[in-house]
Image (cartoon, rainbow, N blue to C red; front, side):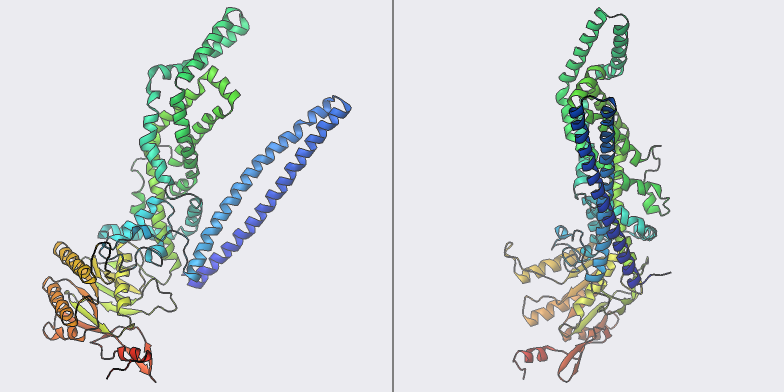
Length: 604
């Protein structure tokens, strides 16, 4: 059954309530455990006081162990409940974020403002990056690599094969949308750069730090010493005498060997163990990607053709066990004993080096997969939240056709839909109309949906089919005091960028909104006309929005290569009404006179 926007919102709100109830229950459990721990502590004190009062008693002394063991059990239980509480809070945030997105258009993930680039062919004009943009609407990534991947797929078109594979992958992840919320919840508390830091340590820092473990003598010593020390200990118990002296000398030798390598050991331990513990936190996220039997080729290609028998999540848990063993050095007494008799720190360092040689490359690839899944899940979530959107058809030959095309960033209740298609041969489509009638929004509607289509995502349309275009836009041209660039110079630079691009790319499509605003009306008209003629000569399709009705007259010179469209207004009792519907032909109704009249100016 196809879900509606209301039913999707209702599901989110039900999930929010479920998590809120779970959080309340877990908090009650924590409170009970805290009171129980306090009670056990008091009972231990009272038992000790009783023993002091009445003297030694075997039964009372034995009872001292009971509260202690129960206390340790409750500490472990409290830790588990706290983990569940933290996770429930993270999952609640994910569900609440989706509900807020639907209700208020608010998304708590990064808005991509750091990817803004005024020189990009279209991103600034089409509202791709920054607050209130397409990136801010779509992003569900929490790792830096995931955010970079999403930005890359919104910044340039993929080839047809990749688009089709991504469409398939996004649909498959849509089928696992419930699990994807848990995937995102597990990443919620991690900082964006943490995965990259771990990858750098695994690839560059740790190999250098572990070089000392390559010494053959150390490897032999770690293997032999535990058996030698055990043999000397047993021999000492049986024979005694000089054997204990040999045992003591061996222990001193072991301590000296550890001390001699202590700087390298500390560098490994303090340089990586924190990252290893963080890496262990990612193992659950990786495990889900391994357990699902994926069918789409795009996702299957994210995994190595021949995997190790041990999954990456298990490789990470193996690393975790090495680090836990390494952590014994935090207990001074235990550390001294283990290093005297087992060369424990050296053994852990060598085990870590062995793990690194065998698994580091696969683990780094597994971390990369987390980011790639995040990026695909962003689009799968978009697909789920927008049930009225549809997957576009990608054509080989020059083509663009859309039915009921709308702007994805305009709320569904106020969004106006239009049909539009290109001719089989490239044309210059001149769109005239009044101020605020919808010309600029329409151009952005076409462009932003093309960006979605080329990323493999669904589009805000009932139907859409198109070939792959390199989108070039000219809309928001700004001057620059820093670069000493006037508006007119900035416009010329943009035009040059477009002309250079269409010479390179035969599949360009140009979107222009009111060209050459920084010059006089005559030069503006002549410049616009010659530019359109250049695009016609280059057989480059263009959507050209303008207030200049003279440009619509170009159809008489180029009847097969120019098409006229317009957005108009309806005036009723002196009031302006906009329907934002695209219509054929040039505009005949303008609103400048009415707008000027509202501020006390009248055109004669």
